[in-house]
Image (tube, rainbow, N blue to C red; front, side):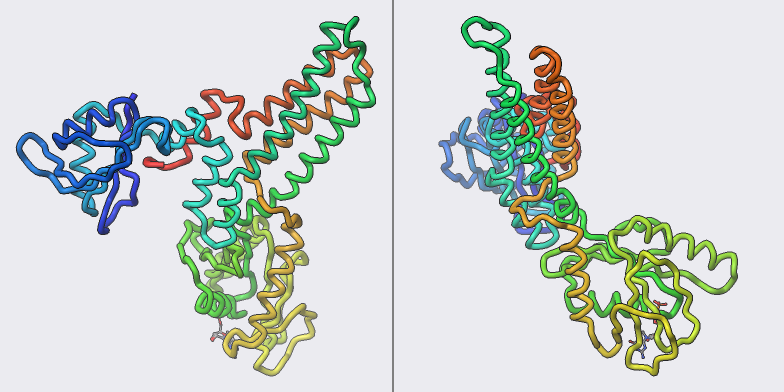
Length: 426
Ligand code: GDP
């Protein structure tokens, strides 16, 4: 099947691109241009619908397997914007291609062995990276480090399975498998899995951001702090749909760590009932955060402490202190006092929480499968008092889960699940 889709973001730009991938791609290109192409020879061509010239484009032809997808591929670079590229796509579809599903180009690439599943996910990470650290992690995974590590683990278990199966099938020639050796090998594998699993939290932070909730009484200085932080270091600012109407979420690049700052603004004092709802909502947001910064206005005497799992930051340090509350750090967002110290404090907490210094940080799907593999290995260890046949049942499961990470054991459900999260054109 030949598939096609626009692979550039919609909008006005110098160029937009379409990818056609599959056995008919070259024939389609010929039909819509009346030109013959040679592998990797860039051609300037007119796209024609009957006698009408739709656009002048650049065409890059790739021959199977030397393409992104591993199929015959034609890339058409048209003038940018909405109309040209969509007209050309329509024509491509009329001539025999079907619209690619989300992630289908990457899926073809995995099925054709151009990359493993972990690398395909890394491309997604790369495209959605919000800071340079996130980009670096994605590139390391794309280079193959994580995939290779998982494949090595899987191969060592396959070796073990092979040896045990041999001793079951040919007891006279091979003899019983040494139980202690088996236990040691499985335990070594479990500790390797644990090492990779340690990177999960940092992976989540790099991909989704470290959630910092800023809570405090009205006028504590929450918005001022948010603005002060964002003003200087705003990298990519996206308004994310808030968990509640009353909170504002902003991306903040803290030396490469993507932080999601959540300003629990909107607690209004007009009516007690409403304020109560607002406070409840702030608590809900704080419950889901990785870190809670509680701002305490030092210039006010009465400042209820809202929760004891927060880091207390005194604000308005430029004014006379009226409160007895103990704080970890005092700042003045207005006067830019101690803002750098606050950033250091944030970084310290992220490093504590993130833990591992490993090179690559896994995502949640990979972590879930590693956990499943680990628990199968543990079950296999529990079966070692039984005959060797019983060890291998869970060992096979453990191998299967590792294979799902890299795509060596692929099911249609697994593929659908992963690639449907990509967008069309990837
Ligand atoms: P929020 O309701 O917690 O978001 O508080 P705001 O950020 O809106 O601040 C409330 C008031 O305190 C505003 O008038 C700010 O200008 C003022 N304020 C905030 N930070 C400081 C500070 O560091 N020093 C002084 N003197 N005033 C501040």
